[in-house]
Image 1 (cartoon, helix red, strand yellow):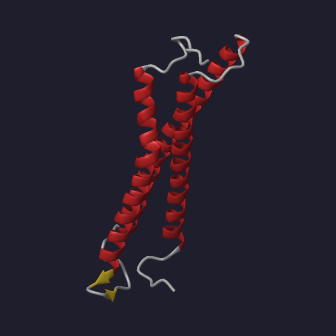
Image 2 (image 1 turned 180 degrees about the vertical axis):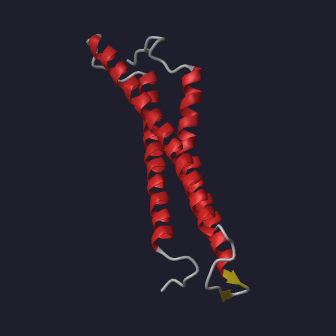
Image 3 (image 1 turned 180 degrees about the horizontal axis):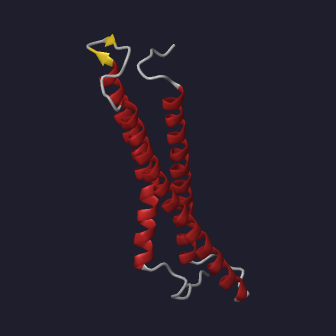
Length: 158
């Protein structure tokens, strides 16, 4: 028989909303920051380095690298904040799950986990996926920026 968890162990509506925001930050905003950075840097590079399919030796824009690095830095900041929120959501649920297990073991009952414990476990898995995605897209941004640093602008890729 499943037992109900005490009220202080259950997730409140406010905590649930906060966890949804943390998960969305990892699932959507961190990849969105990477995608936006790639789209903007490729568009700027294409406009600055090519004139009607003819490659230019020098970029047209005076502050070409400032635009590239500026968008990259902004994307990294947004992505790090989003990954941090996703990791925060995961850690919060991990602590909540440990609290629920500790109180469940103190009762001496070795029954099935309660519905609240199962809910926290499911949400913890989603938060883990969100945190992993957020952190991987931070890493993807770092590698995208490294390509900008090591490859010269307006040179063909061979």
